[in-house]
Length: 185
Image (cartoon, rainbow, N blue to C red; front, side, top):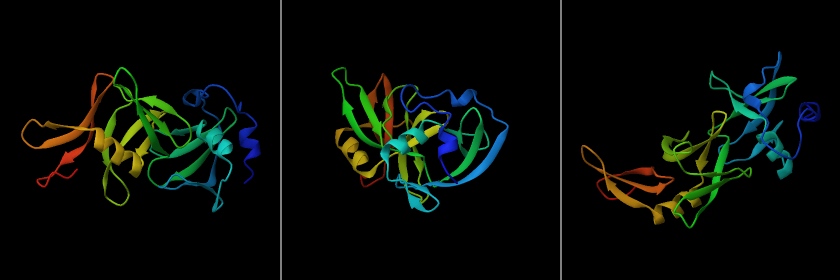
């Protein structure tokens, strides 16, 4: 499938479109997979243009039934996502102690009440935090970023026993994971 007709309805610069308010009648399926490692594959081949991946990411949403779709005012194309559609690949702490994450597609968000870390299992069964981004979409913490955040984390006792590693950001505790008896997260 040619991506151009789908993208013809989207402004390539500016704000994230209001895909949550678009409900087109024309629905199809596209051979597009977002791999667990963050690569976008169209008809089995990686999309090599970062600007195109960014543009596609701005029209992506998660449907109420859990499926993922690229949505424009004119049509909706269902796609496949192996884990989470985005990867958080960088983080920085500002002067107020808030943590800001950047995704592989260029989203930048502050860890706070709206964008909270939440440990969940990867397809391989490993507990790795994710963070809500927008429109039901989440970013999995990339491995390098996860270890960077663990180095900056503090340990807190959990009610009922045990300990958890995490960060304070935006006035909210952001859990990175529970510690087992050996002290490993």
